[in-house]
Image 1 (cartoon, rainbow, N blue to C red):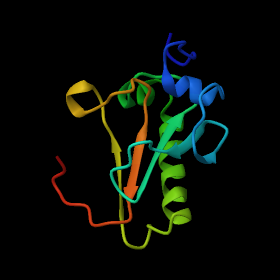
Image 2: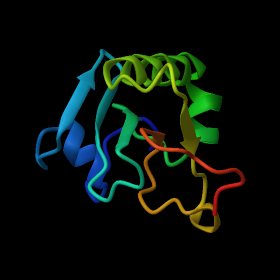
Image 3: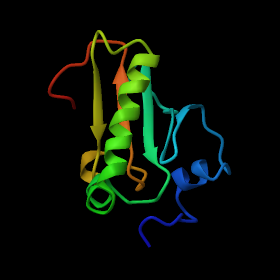
Image 4: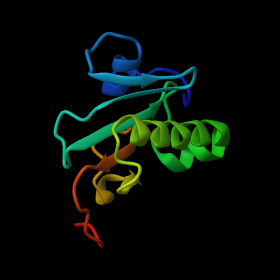
Length: 119
C-alpha cells in the first residue's frame, strides 16, 4: 500500500534505521543521504519517509511532501556550498529513466560542470 513501509524496499529500511546511510539532513517528512555511487562531487538523495514508488504517485498523493523534498534540496545545496555555482535536481521515474530503487527519490547533483542534455 502506498505510503506504508515496504519490507523489500532499501530506502524504507534506511528510513527505519535498519540499513546505514550517510544522512546529511532530516525533516519530519524527508531524509537525505549521500548516494553510494556518486555521479558528481555532491550527490545526495532526498526521499520521503513514506513509501511511494515514484515521483508521480507521490505528487498525486502528497503534493506537500514534494514541496518538502524540493525545499530540502535547496537547503542541501546551500549546506554543500553549490547553490551559487548551480546544481541539478532529478527525479528518475521508471526503469527506462534509470530508476533502480522504486521508492520516490530526488537526486541533488553539483560541484562540477553539468552538461545538458544528460545521458
